[in-house]
Length: 312
Image 1: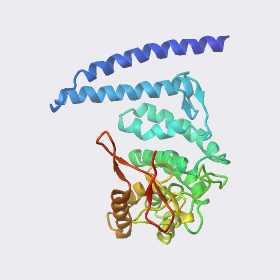
Image 2: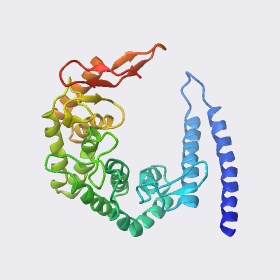
Image 3: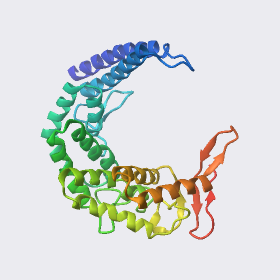
């Protein structure tokens, strides 16, 4: 009964905080004047409103779901999803630092130092390697890059070792930590093409190039597979199938540009791959809708003929 009373009290407190937050947002939205450049005063007020929104979200996580993966926004219940390692906390580290919430950042750091190593050791079964890479490894590396606190670099190496061990000699990374496939039942572009940035950063900061050598081999692997005007099917090993800029495909192309930029714009092969993909997108995937707007369509490709747009 006491636990239930505490929960009801938290809900009432959240409702009060939410009303105050909505009031601030309404006041800020009233400051907008279409076509007129905002003054420094208005920009400062907007910035404070954004900081207040961040503080609102973070404080709710601390009260309701501390150490859990997420807090459910409607029921305010804590939830450990498949990750089981406080993924919201890790994902928020860089935001806390940039917003100037150094006390909250330190609070999260202290919890992670004690608890994260054990949680990372239990990353098994159907936990997504892709999501863990971009959210947890990326979150830890961002926290290190901003704070230069070696604690985050050490945690990054710990997690990096787990992911690195899953990547084979061709740079292919599985969907999950149990080496399974995702919903497409294949190795996708996103699975293997969305970790090069993180591992190159680890290689640079540690001086150990072996961090990036294995994942970088995927670029050679994928270039040896059939494509159409720079576009690969998401199940790239099949040499045919669905081509998309949505889930399982988009981040591969996104990382081509990011990794090229990270290289100091020196690796022409990455730029050429990205440039060809954009040209292929414009050639095959664009469609004007009845509303006059331009949409990016998915394609179906047999591996031989020109790809066809997939109608929704």
